[in-house]
Image (cartoon, rainbow, N blue to C red):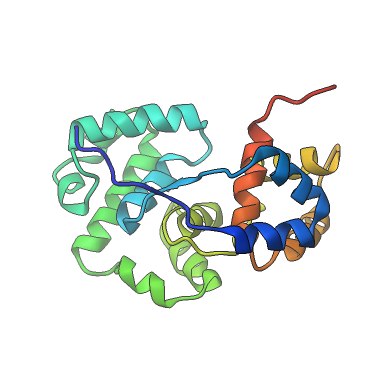
Length: 210
């Protein structure tokens, strides 16, 4: 099996020190947790397909499906996936809707109608806007690409349930409004992506005391 090339999200003491000063509550959690590594996929196409696979399912399910796809298709490239039908892609364990979305992305790239490298020249909002024009690709999927491939520094996704859960645990909230989320998001800027990495970790922790 050809394993997808990955690396860890690149951040350092500058971002850590900034967030600890900007938000002492988050800072205390960061101090307790230590450095958190977040694996990313540098290749735009592979990362986009991974994000589509990951829509609305658990991390464990994504891992299982992703391994099946690599075993069946080899490297996750437009050339390799283009040799298979949506039915064959679906057989790896995803919904037919996702399989069709993946097949459509492959076809758009093969026809030259989708040029993923051009995304690097766009702002975060423009990347989200452009990717959201693709059938089956919404804001969350685009935001995951911004973090988990493009390493954009200031991305926090309201659409990510785990991010919201991490915020609620961090600040001891029973619920989280969009206004509260936006207030915290602005407080983390311009290092929101590193804050997201820690919020994901907090979300995954076993809750103590309740």
